[in-house]
Amino acid sequence: QVQLVESGGGLVQAGDSLRLSCAASGRTFSSYAVGWFRQAPGKEREFVAAVRRSGGSTRYADSVKGRFIISRDNAGNTVYLQMNSLKPEDTAVYYCAANVLNLIDTVVPHYRYWGQGTQVTVSS
Image 1 (cartoon, one colour):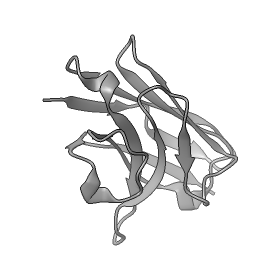
Image 2 (image 1 turned 180 degrees about the vertical axis):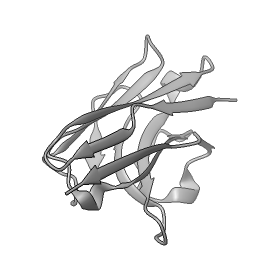
Image 3 (image 1 turned 90 degrees about the vertical axis):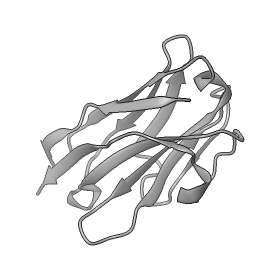
Image 4 (image 1 turned 60 degrees about the vertical axis):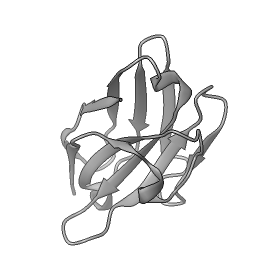
């Protein structure tokens, strides 16, 4: 069993940066790939980024490539999402999730464990 808690969200202006954190409990966390997803009002949850358990392989949605960076600290049981050059269209609730097969997958149902989310709002 893994529990995930996101933090770091907030209200920022376009062009600003934020760093989200996903803190995990459970000794098996370092065995799982971790993804970040987001959901804007009235829209489906969408993939943002993912990182394998080693931290050596990552994957990004085209909409955030070159602006967002995902990383992890397995010793600290934490995964980060550094978000730069934020745009109003990045406004959403951001969730982290664990993939027990260590796949950097874009598909929501393939992730077993989910956090409660953190709100990111980018004003123009």
